[in-house]
Length: 180
Image (cartoon, rainbow, N blue to C red; front, side, top):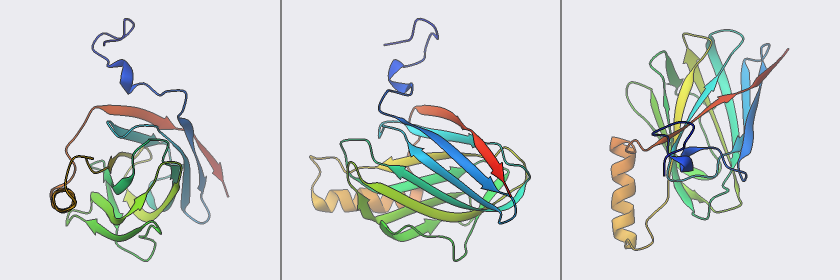
């Protein structure tokens, strides 16, 4: 169903009442960007844009809650063309045992774990950005209930290697408070 105000926009791609507004804090002195919130979707990718006080290297700490009714077994982020992930000690998520970064350092996938409905997930990583307005696309993978355990594992391995297919996008601009 299309929106009467925005022809062609799928109404389901709008932020809904169950979403928790994403917000962030940039600590300039420590070069740390903290983002929190939640978007209630597994059927859409989420495009997140932030305005940083300056370009360069930032450690990102991102916390979100699974508001969906499905368990996430992998989470992927893809940075814009002006940014890259840095493979360092900050790269981790307690909910996932493994991570995979592409050789071009633009796609990062956390996997081998799970985030059940209602649970929070924490991810930390570093990024280097050439501009003040980096954007990343975030995707989650939940196994299909009718798939066998073997098929779900094959699909997960394929997604880690080749990336998750692009889906309709919910676009967000995250307000950032600058401190330090």
